[in-house]
Length: 298
Image (cartoon, rainbow, N blue to C red; front, side, top):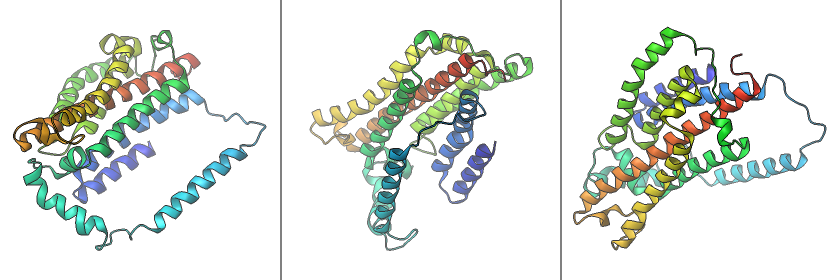
């Protein structure tokens, strides 16, 4: 609960700082998905810690070295909020002054994330995909395990089930709006993917994993998770085949601005598909594992 409250407060701070896109993400992830996954983790591992007899000296050494390297890396960084930082004197002004003519969309944040930093965003999507694969590998779930139903404390509440049926369609519609309106306002693939996943997770909580998988099966989610990354990377390959650089959307059409629009829409769709599929897949994994331990109803 405290984590959810912190997420809402952080989102409010970002709104006051006119960082609406970041606030959007914080509200969806920090206040929505993360607390829910934390609760599932607590239900999965139990209340008491199992004490190991051995000592994790190698792990402590690795963490210490990694932390020291990170601290050393921050020493060469400019001071926080410095007006003479390169981001304030070169990068930021170029984005603000040139994004309208070079990219042709009103939302500068989308221009930066999807076009100027398209390769970095591609890496972030790959990281999300890798995280999903890591969860599957750690939990070592089989398809038969995922099919087992999960009975939650809200499963038998008729009022909540009816209200959720009413709310889920507007949530999915809003996710589509956020997905395809990110060029002109706050939003984009990351936010839309999390919102879409939240709707599926809400349905799963009240109707069970077995019923939810009749709508979105685990096998379909695995295909969608990989398809989103493949769709993003394919845009870069098509750009190269048309004579441009990797993820140079200007090469996708005769008019560079039109090419930018096409590229951003397609890669944002890939981001949304991968994020939504991975979030729901992780929830399925945790929920099924909790069901196996017999603690889902506690």
